[in-house]
Structures are given as structure tokens and as C-alpha cells.
Image (cartoon, rainbow, N blue to C red; front, side, top):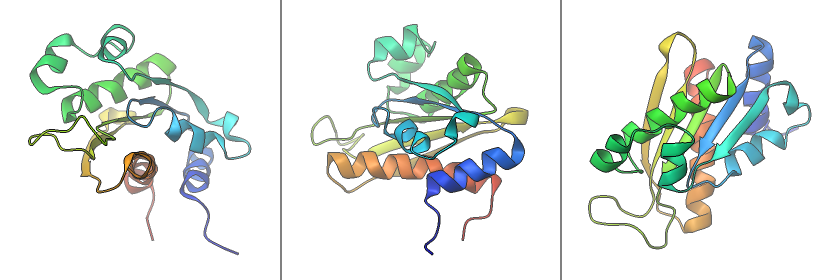
Length: 162
């Protein structure tokens, strides 16, 4: 029997702690929550999420400060932090993930290349972690890698990875 998928491992961790999770996704377009909800019984711990693809949604729905978006951009550590904190507050979950990035093939620059992604995790007791990645894949590969990184971040923060 093979190793459990990351989303199943995250589900086991959440069940064991009686925790819930939510997400605010941009470049992954709901892929992260899709993966989490592919696990049977995930309704016990997945509360919901928001695809905040446009800055207007990041600002008006999630409450990311316009000044943050102007100063740092939608693809930044600061925006990922704000998105994770906002999702946690909005859904009332124990944990919240955020993903914001440039999936490609266009939209990159010398400063922010295609594949640049920030994955955030907000949790109890003020936990706030953001990881930066620069993926070398095509659009779908970058989205897949970003969702995978978000799941791994939960396990990195709360469980031992193999």
C-alpha cells in the first residue's frame, strides 16, 4: 500500500487535533481546496475558501490593505500574510492557507518572474508563516506545485515530514 496523499495526511492531522482549515487562493484558482475536498470526510475539517484572483477581491472581500497591494504587490509576502489572516478570520478556522503568485506563461518581470509564488499559513497562537517559491514549470505545473507546497506547509508546521 502506497503512502497517503498529502491532502489525506493534512486531513488526518486536522482530525487528530479537531481543527478546521480554510483558504484564500489567487493563482491556484481553487486547486488547493479542490485537493483538500477530494478526501472523503473532509467536510469535518474544511470550512471553505475564497478565490481572490483580482486585487479588487483581495482588497474589498479579504480586506488586504490597498497600501499593501500598492507598496508590495499582489504577489508578495505581505499580501500572502494578509490573505491567510483574513481567511482565518472570515471563516473562523483554526488554520488558513493563502496562495498568491504568477502562474504564467506571461505576467512575470525581472523582479517578479513567472513561477514566483508565496504560500502562507495562519494558525493558533499567532502562527504566521510565509514561504517563497519560484517554480520552473508551465502554468498548470506552477499551480500544482503551489497547492502541493501549501499542503506541505501545514505538515511542516504541525507534523513531521518524512
